Image (tube, rainbow, N blue to C red; front, side):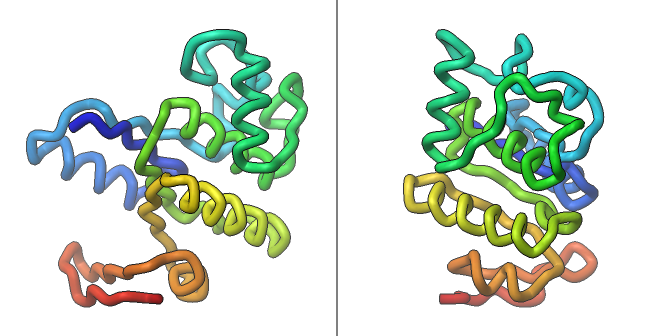
Amino acid sequence: MDTQIVIVGGGLAAATLVGSYRESGGDERITVVSSDDRPPYNRPPLSKGFLRGEGDPRVAFRQLLERIDYDIDPDAIISDLPIGDRQMVAILQALSTGAELVIMDEPTASLSDAERALTFSIVRRLRAQGTTFLYISHFLDEILDLTEEVTVLRDGRVTLRAATT
């Protein structure tokens, strides 16, 4: 598997998915990017090791911001940012890995309506650029609005698989 997989959220569903993947022989190329304010979120986005990649981290951060058409102070302490900005930083961190598949586990649960709309806009923009999203949510409106296909699980079993478009 050459695709880098990144999980934004890191909740129970993500942990279960990662565990199942690894138990079935999957490798360690899954990265979990938490969107809460635990460390390393007590530092700026340009801190050493926060963004992955080569070259000047300030230039790379600016390019990532341009890719999602968003602006965040690269020197701000992440835990001091509003929750919506922290969500965008988590997405930027995921993108810095070169991820082609991003798994988002309940990414809007603690966001305001405006922050939800912004997250949706960025997911759509990145999807148009070729990034694939596996979106986990209990909000049906989000699923119908953002996806092309839905899979419903109950007690770990698929109960429905259908197109949403």
